[in-house]
Picture 1 (cartoon, rainbow, N blue to C red):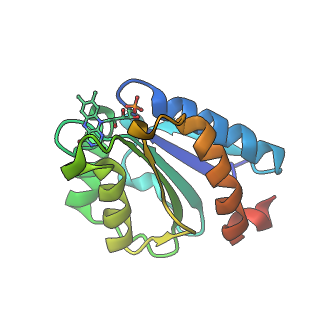
Picture 2 (cartoon, rainbow, N blue to C red):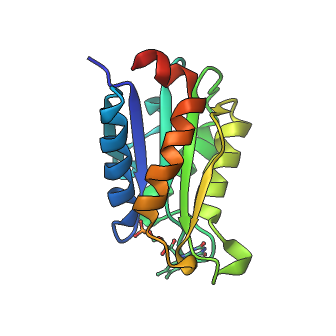
Picture 3 (cartoon, rainbow, N blue to C red):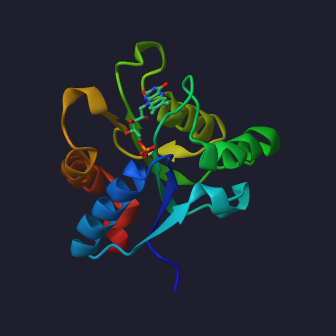
Length: 157
Ligand SMILES: Cc1cc2nc3c(=O)[nH]c(=O)nc-3n(C[C@H](O)[C@H](O)[C@H](O)COP(=O)(O)O)c2cc1C
């Protein structure tokens, strides 16, 4: 059976993986079954109308998506699939020390998916590593709010 939610992870050093696991575990407690998929294995066909996704990605270089997300992001930009009917949430990891490009990895996904017709559910969450909080803890606080805004997931639970 298909999971209720696919969490798509872009990471360089694994922080976004930890965040994804914590969020998956919290949602499991609400009766939502999630799969975690590395973006390195993905192509644009992963998106199916009627399903919900959670993008969980950090930022590297000069506001770039992580290396393991590059091909996926570029393929979406190149092929521009129609993502009408796709809903998504967004967790972006970054560090405001990089003030010109803070959380651009997540922000680039938010803009691209929206441009392609997908609908952002609730508010995106952008974590700032410079504020000294742990992203996996903050993300679990955020996901509780996100879940209450995410009607398709509440119906699945
Ligand atoms: C070399 C390097 C470049 C980075 N560039 C940015 C950046 O441009 N903007 C930003 O907001 N964060 C930037 N970061 C911060 C990371 O996105 C942040 O530490 C994140 O939590 C790492 O998550 P990950 O382990 O999942 O890759 C950078 C970090 C490193 C080490």
